[in-house]
Structures are given as C-alpha cells and as structure tokens.
Amino acid sequence: MAKLSVSYISFIELQEIVDLLGNVSGYDLSGYSKSSLKRRIQRVLDLERMDVVDLKNAITNIEGFQTYLMNEVTVNVTEMFRDPRYYAALRSDVFPYLQTYPQLKFWSAGCSTGEEVYSLAILLMESGLYDRSFIYGTDINGNVLESARKAIYPLKKIKVYSENYNASGSRGSLSDYYTAMYEAAIVNTEVRKNILFSQHNLAADYIFNEFQFISCRNVLIYFDMELQNKVFNLFYNSLAEFGFLCLGSKETLLNRDIMSNFKVINKEFNIYQKIR
Amino acid sequence: MSKADDIILIGGSAGSYNLIVAIIESLPSYFLYAIVVIIHRNPKFTTRIEDTLAARLHRPIIQAGDKTIVSKNMIYFAVPGYHLLVEPDRTFSLDNSEQIQFSRPSIDVLFETAAETYGKRCTAFLLSGANKDGTDGIRMVKKMGGNTFAQSPDEALMRTMPENAIRANQEINILTDQEIISYFRNLR
Ligand SMILES: C[S@@+](CC[C@H](N)C(=O)[O-])C[C@H]1O[C@@H](n2cnc3c(N)ncnc32)[C@H](O)[C@@H]1O
Image (cartoon, rainbow over all chains, first blue to last red; front, top):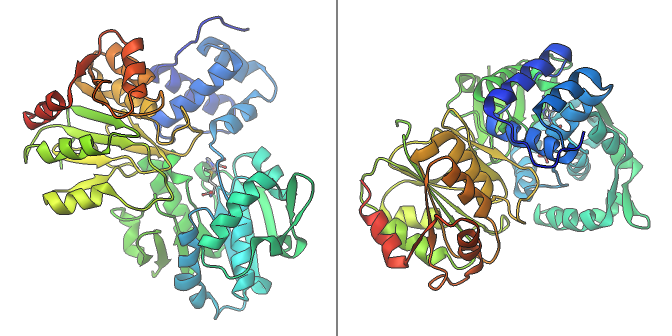
C-alpha cells in the first residue's frame, strides 16, 4: 500500500495505536515517552510508506507485524565499553565490594546486541571475579538477542570499542578477547562462557532471579516517570541485600521515593547500593 | 520551580559559540521563559560551556536531563550524544536513536517536538552552522504558529545552516547579531 505523500501521525492517533497494540498483543507501549515513541512510529510509517489506517490494519491482520513493529520501535544503539569512565567506576567503586562473595549474579537489563554484557564479562575477568560470576542479558527485542548470542561484530565497530576499552583504564588490549575474521570479530569463548541471553519485558514487571548487580543504561530514558518508577521497584525487588543498581550517566534515582532504600555510590554514573 | 508557558529554542553549530555566550550574558536576571540551547558538539569532549557560564554569571545553567520539568527562568543545554525532546507534559526526554542530519542531538528533533507541545508559544532561533540541521524544525515551529528567527548569513561564521532554513522558510525573520542580542536583553 505505497502512499505518494508522507503521512504524519498525531498524538491522538499514537494513543490509538498504543491501545490497539496493547489489546491485540502482549506489547504494552503505554508507559513509553510520548514524543520519542511518536518519532519511532513515524519512522515505521515512512519506511513502510503507510498511513495510520494501514498501520492499524497491519497490526491486526499481518502475521508477525506486531513483533516487527516492536523491534523497529526500540532503539538498539550500543557499544562495548560505552561511556568508558562508567566501567572505570565499576572497577574502583563496586568490584572491591563484590570480592567477598562466593557467587555473583549480574543482570544487564535492556542489553541490546550484547556489547554491554561482554564488556562486563571482560571487566570481571580482569578483576579475577568471572569464574564466580554469571551474567543474564535480557531485552524485549528478539532480534538483538539473536545477534548478542552470535557475538560477532564488524571490525569497523571493534575499532571504536577498542578506543573505549583503552579509555576505560584497562591495561590489556581488547584484541585479547576476540578473534578477528574477514570483516568481523567474534568474542572468544572464555568471555562468553558464563552468560545467558533471554527475552524479558521490563514493562511487564516480573522478577526472575536475585542479583548482586543490575545494570540498566539507556533504557529508562524511553519510559515515562510512572513506568520508570515501576521498573525501579522491579529492580529493588530483584536485588539481594547490598546489591548494586547501575543506571549510567543519564538516568537517576534521585528525587524518587525508592531512593530512601539506596545509598549513592557514584553520583556521576548513578551507581546505587541497596541498603534496606 | 513552575512549568514555563513559553519556550525559546536556540540552535547552533560550527561558529555559533560566541554569539550564544553573548546571548546568555545579555539576559535579564529574571524572565518568564524556558530557554533551551542546542549546539552540535563532540560527546567525547568534556569541556562544558554551561558550567563555565553558570560560574561566571552566578545563575543556574544546566543540562536538560531526562524527565526534567521545563521551567521558567531557566537556561538549559542539550547534552551531547543524545537527542533532546520535549514531551506533551512539558518535560524533557532523551533519546539515543539514529543521527538526524548527521547530528545527535539534532536541532530538528528538539524544534519539532517543542513546537508540537508549545505551538504559538514556541520561538526558535537558528544560528551559524555548516550543515542543514534546523531547517525542518523551523518549518514545524512556523507551522504550529510559533516565531522563527535566523542569524543573518552575512554575519554568521558558517552561513549554510541559517541560509538553508531561510531558503526553505520564506517567513523566517532574519536578524543581525546585535538585533538577536537586544531581543534577549529585552526579554521579560
Ligand atoms: C539503547 S539500548 C541500550 C543498550 C545498552 N544497555 C547500552 O547502554 O549501550 C536500549 C534497549 O532497551 C530495550 N528495551 C526497550 N524497551 C524494553 C522493555 N520494555 N523491556 C526490556 N528491554 C527493553 C531495547 O530493545 C534496546 O535494545
């Protein structure tokens, strides 16, 4: 159904799409930030040359379209050692505390194509903690999890990742952890061994394990305050006593009710420890 | 802090730095608007004009954080590396999606989302720059009834950005640097 001119979606139509998708699928977009979500849906309309009526039809009638839409709506941009100083902060402010545990469970929520999980694994290896650790990487988007499991990244990206790695203060070289092939690199098996990727929807709110460490970066910005608070609760309930919640530089617990249960470990990178 | 009923957006790129500093220096100590400055800058580069200016002018000039309320008498800067959006409930949100016009933050994204929420109470300034970001944003601000201004390309260090917007938007007002500065000096 190709249209000649571009069709713009209004906030009212956006709400209709959100309601429809919620009714006919398990995908609940009602807690996503409106302006950002509207741009994402507009992008799908442009890509598919659809208008809002076409979009509604596709959601109800085309097999697989709901999942396709969700995958297109989510923003999956990520890097290994993204925000290098965040990783330096983990090494200096969090890991010393974790040394005392015989067993460690980590959760990277909204892990996209896996770079954050592998970065964490490398950092744990370098701190001598990886043998006792297990990392769960979850995301709502099945496509990115597929790539995460493959652990193959184009060399062009690896170049940026290496710069990040070096800026994070690690002494080795990122090339110690991957094997280069023609145009791509695959993450080595000793990095990949204690990791499980699985699908999980933060908006659907369920606990699946208890963790010493949860990292969720560049995910909550897509949620409104209400959903953010709901997810903070989920994290609180998923953390072991004295467990760490790491939100990165843009997302914060400050000014939220739940903050009273946490202590600030690092303000710049919003690293918190559960204290009650 | 109370929500602003009016918003002024200032978009700049290469060559806009000095004018932006002059604008902020000329502001009265109290005004009813929220002012949002968006400049293209490298996220790996940590110098922050907002900190320097805040210290020098003794007033809060802050990065527009995720879910922050858009407040009166405040000057916000877009953070590097993320698009800055205005939500219908008059808060900011951040988004890490694809670059627009090779830029993130993109002036178009801020201008378009602010225009949709603030309508005729949105005013936008487009300053010097070497790319075409901002043209679509200016178009949207105008379409929603807001006021639009471009720095005169003859005074801009890089003329492409204002010139492109002027070409695409006949109704945009073209101002000299002095006129821009006195606009801000006279804000209430
Ligand atoms: C920008 S990526 C962040 C990747 C990584 N954490 C980082 O900071 O580089 C955001 C991820 O959040 C995921 N996401 C969005 N909504 C979600 C939800 N409701 N539940 C779980 N993941 C979600 C997206 O699919 C996307 O992969």
